Image (cartoon, helix red, strand yellow):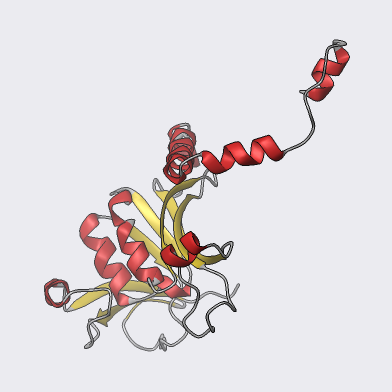
Length: 215
């Protein structure tokens, strides 16, 4: 804008960013959330069937933590880790998002304090996943409960198996080289983010395809 006005020989606006920063701070947090998801949905609507993977819309799920300015409001909403002495740390926000593989745009997100587990935040995003979509996640999401939550919704999943889970390709029904069909039994312990009723309602076992990766 400064270059435009200067070229026209008119008075140029100030290059100082103070007014912009103050105005930005007055914008409500929910506005940013709405704009991000609205933009992501608009981009996704432009995707053509030829851009889908095996006729599925791929949703990448991932989580992270963000350090925030040390203000009283942030400390109250997103307390610093309990392992740090008061006044020696920064507020920390936990964030879980769904990305579109086609556009790279953020489609949905859930935020909470560090005390909220990544899985608890992921459960808030389940309503954003629909039949005809595939959830793509890293080892954190390669567990029984993610499959148990997605299958009733008609959502496919492609997940790396958790490092703690041993995979024996000599077991299960062989489908091809380094490719087999196996049964995953429900863990005996109910996770913290799930109620006893939800745990009891989950299927006793899940059938899934295990495939070796040499990447």
